[in-house]
Amino acid sequence: MQEDIENRTVALTVSASRLTGRVLAKVFEKAKDKIKEKHNNAKTPHGRQSVKKLMNHNAATSSIPLDGDTKLFDRVARKFNVDYSFHKTEPGKYLLLFKSAQADAITACFSEYTKLFMARGKSRRPGIREQLSRFTERIREQPRERERTKEAARDER
Image (cartoon, rainbow, N blue to C red; front, side, top):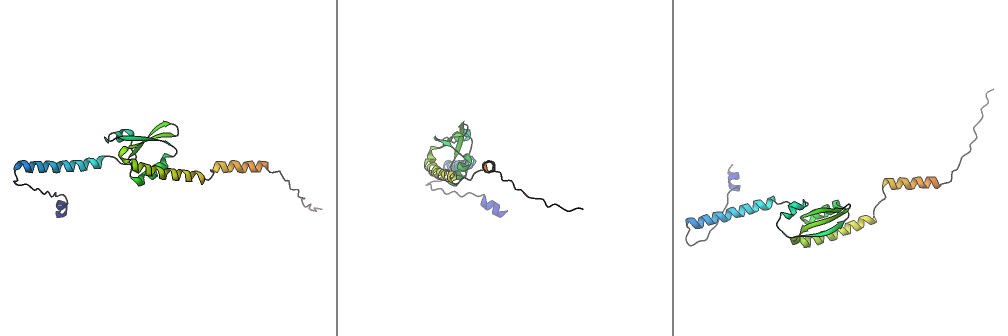
């Protein structure tokens, strides 16, 4: 119980020539504002979020068109701790919205994303359906070879 009380105590230092009730009230007011600010910062969402939540951050936003895999971008953006949102413009095309203050982090994130996206296109293995269709075409193109075998006639006399 003593540890809980020690963890919840707040230490304030005030340097004033004369400590009056007004000065003490101002100090407590500033401490309360700091605690509220920390609490509100903890409440703001980070990472991928809706467009509405991103706009509620009260910060300037920028956008970049994105064609491609959003899940791959999610994986990369988590590494860079970026606040962003997707707005779907057309099927397969998105508008990536992010905070303007995080432009440097977004450019680094985007460069890694393009590197991974391009590498994924080169080493892409064909899907199972593609392989099956190729094999069926190969089998159809092969000439049919019929094996002729003689059956051994048995003497049943």
